[in-house]
Image (cartoon, rainbow, N blue to C red):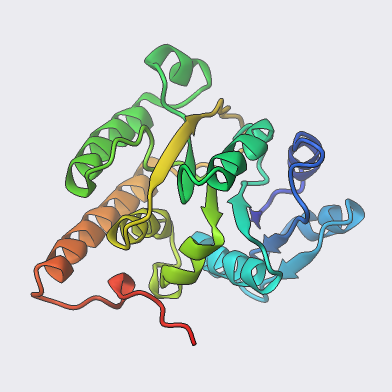
Length: 241
């Protein structure tokens, strides 16, 4: 769980994860100014705390590195802000366990009625639909929501993708999908209810546009790398002994 200011929502998030659907939890706190760490410790959750804020992508780098060191075979990223429905954790992991996909996303987009009923702003919906259409076309996928922060990965994916070279900001998520596809991994998705409320994390329009520009740059870099015009270390698989 990559956490930042999650003190008010962490307990509810953890309580909603189905019992028996995981072997261990890990929270990485990105130097939160609230009591996120204290709440996690009261819940008995192991915590890694950044001494300074490293950003959303930087937080995930710590999360995945630590999960691999812990010996995880499947890793689920669940935001502790209780925006995504934790009940779907065993569904995401089972798809990987069955060998159907190597990486699974929780898709927030099923219908406009459902999305707007959950509180998604109309501008966010428009940006999501437009960019997802473009990215599906370029990558040859048919995913419903490229921007979901609810994800499950096989160990093989995390060992292959050079995610340490990715952005420390929100573009990390987009880069990771592009990398996984570039290395031939199968990506699927499942519908997941989502709720927008005051305590749930969300980025504003300005940050969303910056995030979108980062995704466009990553797509362009991927195409240049594939064409042999410019090598990009983000699309060179990790070499392990």
